[in-house]
Length: 117
Image 1 (cartoon, one colour):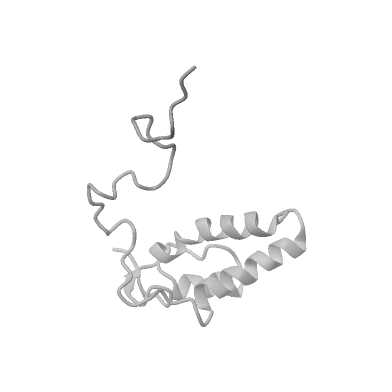
Image 2: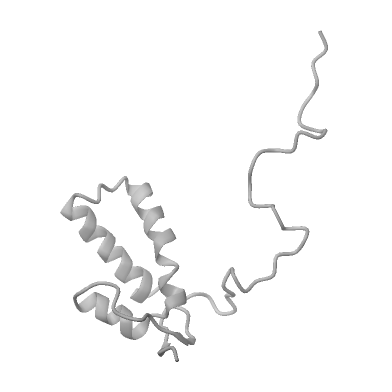
């Protein structure tokens, strides 16, 4: 049976991580207070931060900044998800929104004025 935690990020009782994600105080704090579902949100957030700031993860200062951002993401004053938030995996995709996540425009009609030679 999965270990249940009161997730401070999502505000729900959910299955926790199997073990601390890394050694140290922050890893233990995440293990005790963050659900697996919330922790699974971190890779996308960390990628956004790394790309936005152009971080070089070989640089100790960049790793320190990312660790601080991780702590803020999980435990900061703005960390809790808004009330009524539904995880993407649980929200049903309607036919009208299916595939509406970007991509190239359709080649059928309407793309622009056609040119005659």
